[in-house]
Amino acid sequence: MADAVGSIDTPDAQDEVPETQKARKGGKRAKKGPLKRLALFYRQIVAELRKVVWPTRNQLTTYTTVVIVFVVIMIGLVTVIDYGLSHLAKYVFG
Image 1: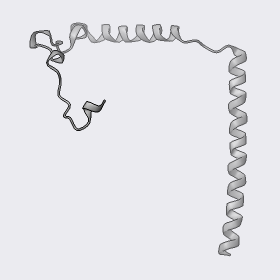
Image 2: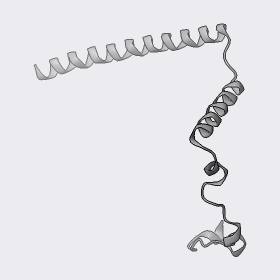
Image 3: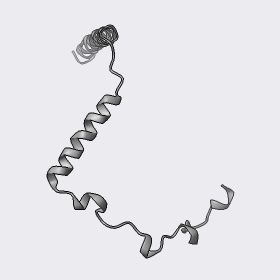
Image 4: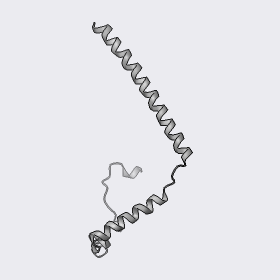
């Protein structure tokens, strides 16, 4: 950490990749047609959705209730503050 202060960040010689080992542009995807790539994309979406841990009906009901109660409380708080500030502005500015 102390040696990085004031130094110029240059890549080390071991970090450089020779021209022959650089990745080709496109890779394996360039060989597939657009419909195959689209099908692969949707298969990957389905695979990721299967990994999701979905909430149970009770959890979903609890989460929904908490959100609705929080929103109602925030609406009430903003309404009270708005009402108070409007009466304060009427008092100050006539």
